[in-house]
Length: 574
Image (cartoon, rainbow, N blue to C red; front, side):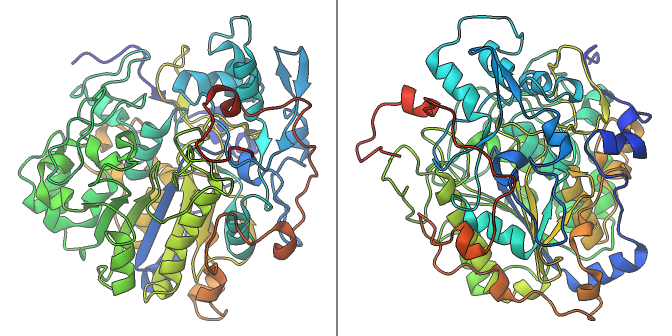
């Protein structure tokens, strides 16, 4: 098929890949990779990787006032870089609005479309968060309604340890990255696929085999929008409806993990050479699973968050789709952890839903917010339920036999429209109309929790969603996705796990703990007794003082969801 004239063209010589430009674009001057000796230690000690992926929050939205521990620096809202762009022009008032602290765990997210995010970033100026939210991606002046203005102000909201203390607890005790970015400027579907494949179809588009997305379209490759996966062929998966994306057919991390599954594949899509090569590998099998709440029941499940369902060879081959599971207290990952039935080594992606299975309810009883995947907005998540759900997962791992050889990666798929002040590096030559995904996107929270994590450290290495694939490759001594025969000819338009400028997350690990000279982080450090809503922890009990001290909400501020939703059946007084 003819290639789209608007396709992404990655530039190897991109300005922001230089050491100087990485600093000026918000990254560190280097993104070190693990040395050979470090890789050997990692491979000896780590056997289980859990990737918990939540929804739609920027770094500033959750950690904009995180102060770090003594001796640490954090690229938070108190830096000179933040001072250069955190006062956003508000067209509705003709004044500027800066970040403010909020305690309400129920606010609506904003525009995180490919074109909307591109406009918000504004070539690294990071100055269009309110303009774009009020005027749209065209920035055409229009009358701004009260609800639209309220939603724009939501984009500047910042939470701290008095509202989401469990997340700050993990940052205080383990490793927080302050230069981790979304791997494209786009919404949840491409963001989740990036975490699974280190690309969203650029190599398939470049090969001419796949259907091009074209300018601003949702179907085809690269993936742009939140269209649902193709109709499910997987037995037991709850049915879903809506716009269906076309099949994706390029290598994903599971292709590297299990040679026997590759050998058993009778449907190979556009990656026959990848599967054939990997089927001949003599590497040990590494188990994997995608665990998503509501996947089989349908309760609260969001199909466009289920990355594996987009891939033809996953849905057509039982050796792949047998690894897709629900995740509730009685089904899926949690019982497997508790009962010790996980494979001896493995990678496990974990996602929540818009209705939690754990019995958590909002502190104010508002029945519009029962989800645990952290997606903002009415009919979605309460952020305190979301962190209690995460704590439930991490508690189970910490109390299990798997803690001693595990790394838990906790991150978010995209920024949800929320402001962040750090410009991402530019790895691609972006289409002028912003109609296709273009990376990197805004900065996101990223925590690494493990017996081998640095304790209470903020790491400044430049990483993005491709770093998750790179980390898995280091841990299990795998080739890169970008080296496989069906992808390699099209690099750098393809998986970015071959890009040495993007880190591999190993900066989170303490070499002293890996080589046995430093005591490991005990399981108790990761355990939060009886996660509850509201949480029992506060800034005071954590011994943390948010910095910088931000003002409260602006005068007359009402979260947009309070303006537009009907009253809840129970008290809606937050």
